[in-house]
Length: 158
Image (cartoon, rainbow, N blue to C red):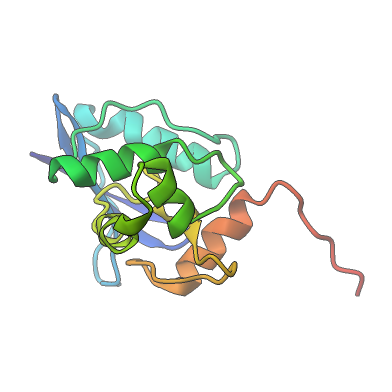
């Protein structure tokens, strides 16, 4: 498994993958980890696309993915991948999309175990009341990501 670390506006991200695809992207709270001096060939495309995303030049990702998870988790992650840039859905909406409104807790659990930070946009899932609920990377990061993706940039009047 190849590993690379990159600096993002939200901290250092750890990317893991191989020729079968990207298996994990996580943002780290450890401030002692430095970005990689060299990126393995298997991760260069992912690194480039993440940099483009953070620079505002990419709204969707075209990467070969290989996350580890149950079949149900993979179904949820696949549904997450279809949430458009700049849009949000509720956990209830996501459960309905998957065909079982009663699976809302299982959907929320699978969402929380998403191993592909940003690429599979679990940050686009919010509470039914519009609140920012649970996010493995922390609510301040979720808020930043949603503001970054908001197509309408509000200008300050003062």
